[in-house]
Image (tube, rainbow, N blue to C red; front, side, top):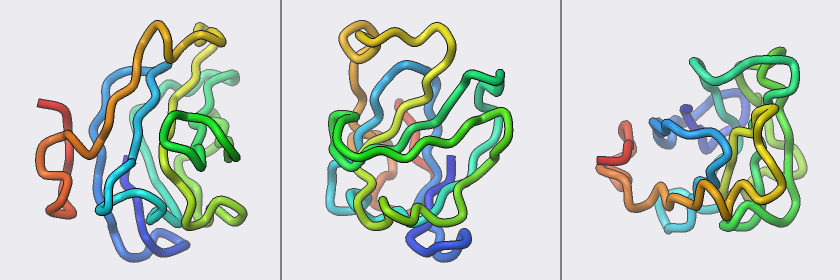
Length: 123
């Protein structure tokens, strides 16, 4: 997933490579927290019930914005969440309400190269 600090996919912020649905990915660091204004993605699950959820709090809580993966490959403008994105999660039809307890959380800020503005991924 590629995050942008500007709406309409302007000003690339970073590209995040992640591998698990039903896991909370935190953006809780100076380089990423509350910076995303838009996002694009590819190769995510895309059945009619799969969603990508962006949250205003680092632990996948708080206000949220939801994108249905079967009809969207990006969010051009986070509108009400602009400047407050602190975490995200891919929810599939198998995601349960206790997903974080089962799949845990990952802080993207601990991934390789997070401060470079390039591609970040878990080692």
